[in-house]
Length: 231
Image (cartoon, rainbow, N blue to C red; front, side, top):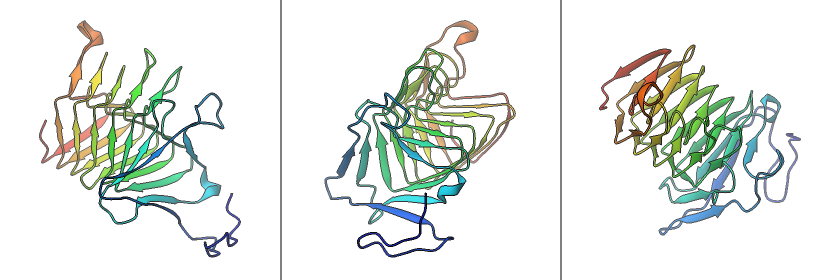
């Protein structure tokens, strides 16, 4: 909850201010590792609140993508609630795990999420019906500005699962993701919409068989526009 009061060296804001968290990055990379498991809703992943919390930006301080957030395979990294508004830039997000009935190995977005020059890697939605090894979206998701979604795994939507939401992928790379079912790189389901522009989708794999295994690159049952992209 925002109180708009000064805390330590952080000055008082206003009711319309956007909050920022800046992560330091060194030449060799600075890693921030999650250390509390997700055994309850109040532990583990980094939850960003609903509309009352206001928009939040998390960014690496000098724009070189040298800050790494590592979930250490104990939980997903970010969970954006309905009404939440999160922007992440110049950060690597890695080693997330969504278990049980959860979707979104690295990130689950039910609100508004923008990823700009962000790498989402080596994360898994481990349930047999888990969706979105990298990112699960049922809100509004924009993947922009040289972002990469790679090396993730799920039952469906190995890189990105868009379940009835709005997805925009621009000038980015979705590669090397794996599913046991459908949609190795990206899956977008009705009534969701997806727009993919200037993006490479390559090297994704579906390990399923028959009707349960299909569309290693992209699967959609909704509306999808693809422009100036390589698949």
